[in-house]
Structures are given as C-alpha cells and as structure tokens.
Image 1 (cartoon, rainbow, N blue to C red):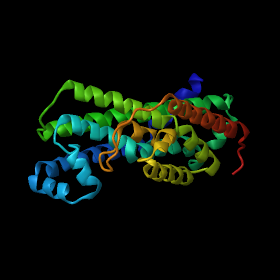
Image 2 (cartoon, one colour):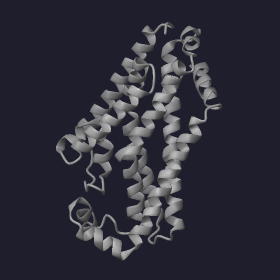
Image 3 (cartoon, rainbow, N blue to C red):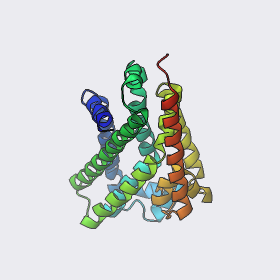
Image 4 (spheres, rainbow, N blue to C red):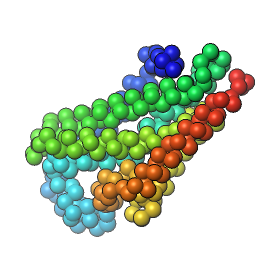
Length: 266
C-alpha cells in the first residue's frame, strides 16, 4: 500500500495540472472579490434591489450586505454551488484517467502490487489535492476581502467558513469514487466531466425542493444555501449522510471491481 501511495504522489511532482487547478481557484477568488466593487456602489445595489427576481429577494434578505460574514459564506457557497463539484471531479478524472492517457496503464496493472491498493492510493491523493484547493481558496478569499477593506472582520467568520468548507468538501469527496469509476469505464476524462456537469445541473434544479437533501451532488448547496437563487442554508438529516456514505461505498466497490477485472489491451 505504501509503495502504491508513494508512486501516486511521485507522479504529481512532474504534473502541471496541480498548478492549473490552483490557478483556477485563485482566478475564481479574484473574480469573486472584485464583485465587492459592485457591492460598494449604492447605485448598483439599488438597481439590483428594484430589478425583481431572485437577486432582489437576496438583496432584501441582506445576503449582499458588504461584511466579512457574508463574504466568507459566499466563498463556501462557491465550492458547494458549481466549481467545487466540477473542479474536484476533474481532479479525480485526472488521477484515475492519466494512466490510460499517458499509456502507462499496463505498468500499473502488471506491477506486483494489489490493484485495490492503487485505488486506495489514488483516493488518498485526490483527498489531499481537493483539501489543498479548499484551503487555498479560503486563504485567497480572505486575503481579497481584507485587501478591499471590508469591515466587520472577526476570527469567528473565518473559522466558520473553514468548518463549513471542510464539511462541503467532504460531501463532494464522497461522490468522487463514482467519477473515478466512470473515468475508468470511459478510459478518459470526457464522460466523467459530462457526468459531473449533468449532476450539477440536476442539483441546481432540485435546490429549492425537499429532494435536495437526498441528492448527493446537491447536499453541499443544501447545507450552506445559495445567495443567488436565493436558497437558505438548511441542515442535513441523518438519512442524507447515510445516502452520501452509501454512494461512496458503491462507487469504491465499482471502481475496485473495474480495476480488478481490467486488462492491458487497448
């Protein structure tokens, strides 16, 4: 197991994908904090409040008030809403699909190491990668909010955002073995990313319904809400966590089964 884990981390040393995913997080954080300029403009906010629709409802609820609490919560909603699901799914597809793309699959399948160990090692790599992206995003958002001089700083706002973002990241991570399985079945990234995109669309469609807490790909948004809809935060119930864990277990079983029965033929 340790040999497989060491091999998986060694592969990342020469990968530029680490830097590209970090760049995506930083660019998203920069874009989000630039929106503070709009929030500081009274004319823009009056236009939003009088335009009607979901943005007006969010403005009326104070979700666009410029303070640290709102800004840090918006950061968490960004992970839960779209980019977390898509970017973390891409990370998973890359980790599980690069063997086929780089024509090194036969080396893995013929090495004297139990194939299940490679699945476990890859999932550890994915966990470390998505955790690092989450922490980087938190740091980038907090730095941006501080640079723009937003008032109302308190350590508790950052601590709350950290706790919520870790919970959201965990919920997304529990869905990633399914992405890994689809990657192996499709022998590439495309099908896995189309699946992740489809799950995001379905999840957004369920966001305002009671079914939201039972759909694993929308549980993160259900937990922290979405200010742009607006959808208020709502805690998950025990059944939600059972479903999420069940998806993880099934996904892992399918992925291990696929690896165990795979051969080296193209």
